[in-house]
Image (cartoon, helix red, strand yellow):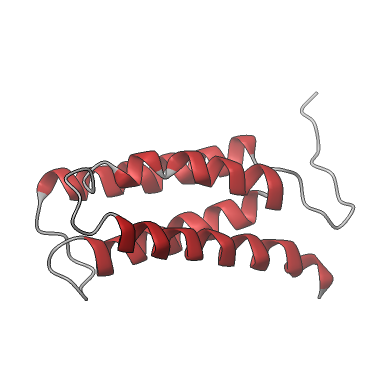
Length: 115
């Protein structure tokens, strides 16, 4: 049970940051670039809380941005092609960053090193 505490906490922090930024950038002209800027926060989440938190936080942030930041609001569909493209790149980049640069699991297991 304890091995899920850090990933859950990291995912919650990532979701809270995505909600806050979606509200703050709602009327901004930079909201199209927000998913790409959020990659830095995903990197921070993955290095502090682990790669699982980074992956789950990436997916949850993408859903939050699609539903609440981009038109049509309250829908997972994104009308603008630039916004949709940046959201896809955030998901691809966030998952890759989390897997490659994320912290090892906190439960004492280590990743096997290739020989």
